Image (tube, rainbow, N blue to C red):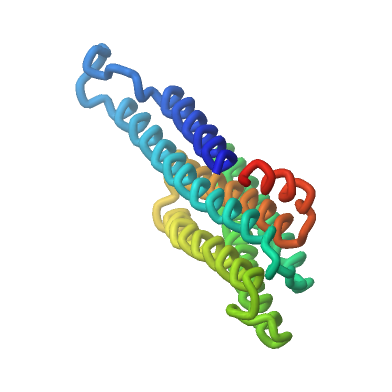
Length: 234
């Protein structure tokens, strides 16, 4: 619980710092300028979009932190035995890394005004993300066929639950990514497109980081850290 509270405090601190940078404490009614200035409206919209994304990432981070905390506590009990992870998870991890890199390249291309390159790398990132989700389903199928069903053991249940929640977040991100892709063909307004791609890239980097932590935990690479955390949580 202490670790969770520390993490939540860290997330809160990051959110507060970000909000301060985005001008949350600003007093626009005291600012001078032309009423209805479109540049000011655009800047406010950009700040609002980035702030909204950061708040969502903070909430999602807290959710995954709670899952990790529960996993660490549960794995210390007597009826816990780890399950083998399908080798396809390595491929899936590579696909998610490729997707994240493709979106970052797309953002850089959009910032430079290179529409075709931004479109191509955006499509590549979407394809890699869809392949990642399909690969996760294949991993589930492989485990079920091998006899590691959802209710077989606590470790099994945690694997399906954690990977499902992560997959749902990725699927939700795909909806936003598809909208940005459609916008890149329908109304290629580069500043607006660059903002949309940048938000998607940030979300993808976050989900990649979450998956790497979960993968390390599920694979047992973080057992030493987990033992220390269990002592702290206990």
